[in-house]
Image: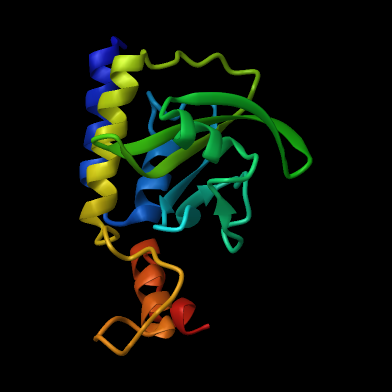
Length: 185
């Protein structure tokens, strides 16, 4: 598959996804892009440099209930800080895997990342820098379409009409595609 077709395929997956978990599922199972893929996680970046897992499917490299920081040593932070697709070896669920982290960047401002987990035995063709940039910008637009543009913040203030902490948690659950029962729990 030529590179422009791979970028177009990723764009189609993003456009077809109903929510963040659906994006992760579609990417993991795609017959062209998902070859060797064991799972996908989607992260949004807060205004304080915290990475929130907003969607996942399959094997997870990082516990979605725990926040990662952009200022810690982790593969997602490395990709976002460099604003380049990064590929690293990782240990997940007692097995060696390869992490492919595509930062989502709008203009020159990082807004999140897509992390794909693959079997290290499967050879996967890497996107060129230009193709990764186009995919990165498309991903940033997708995160914004989920309504996450101003969602990620660490404190809630109700004095000036902002969301309460619980309202914020409910919106995050909705963005993840969780059911009402899952959100209530």
